[in-house]
Length: 288
Image (cartoon, rainbow, N blue to C red):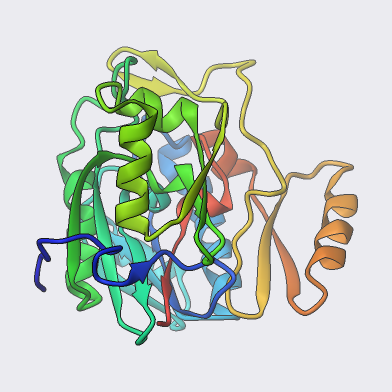
């Protein structure tokens, strides 16, 4: 598909709210042994549960490597589309495209610069070439035209209300783009997400630490467990549970906050051990 030499704002496109209608959802199959324990088998079981829960509400596509295609296909129901695609790890919220829509219902995608969560700190992985190409490949499969931005950004660092307001953090975007400064980053967010205003928070989720060239979980390390790391598919909420006494109160609060959506939970401790949660491993494709 075409790479467009302008910006979404110039062309009348904007990032919609996640609660707006979707055409489907993208995920990536976990397999890295340096990020997922026991050859990623427990994580694969957890990702499968998330995929099947989302598929109750909207179509799901699972990207898998060539080596893992048979394994993934055997462990996912026929409701899940499985496609071969190269990638480095399964955090598609950060590495996939950010879809934008126009008032006429067209859907395009923004392909950000991805540098493995590096800023002043070292990158998460020694090589991230496949992750850096992932957004473009997803857009080709979606037959969606592409905007290419030079802003270093992970999709998990932004949230939009679909009405012109964008939420982000200083910790992520200012660290990733030290030469631009706040004003420079904000202008690029406005241009590439069609926003009118940007609200800045100080910090994001607790990060990971470097060990022997890659970043791994450490015993006793703080993990980003949060019940707000949920996904909003069409007509539903897919939220994490942690086998904790707070699970039920959190579920009750979500049902109170989303009375018109069916709230379901999925055990998410294995995803948490990898460094994120449900929202981090999915990327919505808006209906437009």
